[in-house]
Amino acid sequence: MARQERVILADPDRQGRANVRTTLNQADFLVIGEVEDGITALKMIRDRQPDLVLADCALPGLNGLELARIVHEDRLAPVVVMSNLFGREMLTSLREVRAAGFLEKPVDVTSLLTVVEVALAHYEEVLELEKKIMKLKDDLETRKVVERAKGLLMSAHGLTEAEAYRRIQKMSMNRRLSMRAVAEAIILAHNV
Image (cartoon, rainbow, N blue to C red; front, side, top):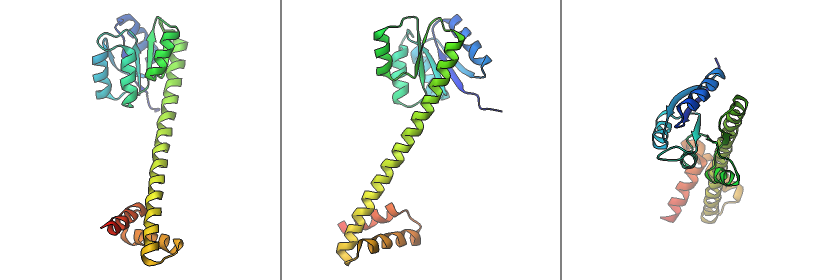
């Protein structure tokens, strides 16, 4: 069985939520929560960790745009904002809060499913890119530490660059530590 995407609906309009829920359920999405205000929505999002949030722009307490901003900053889920008002100001606001999409109300089936699928795909892509960036940053930091340790070994023991690298590599294998950990230990030992 394929994994069902879990959705939270935040909309003060009970009938609108029911219509969206029905459409999502028919498309094999799982609605795991429905709320009428932004503060309760944020609590529910943090508790239930949905794959997607659909939030009305006019939520009481914490509006949908502010909810989208918080959820984006905390990397909790993509948020698709819904509203019956759309214009240049709304578009600017959507960009500022990093909303994953926009649906004009009343929501039609085709738009709903299209926006939801695109938002989920883009969010997954963003998360993968962020993981790659973190790995690249870590690799770069490791390389800097190893280079510094090599330099210390070269000057302290009169080694060539290749010999210093090989020594770090050998210590790493013998002690079953990462090369970064060994390099950090060498730097620490030389700074004492």
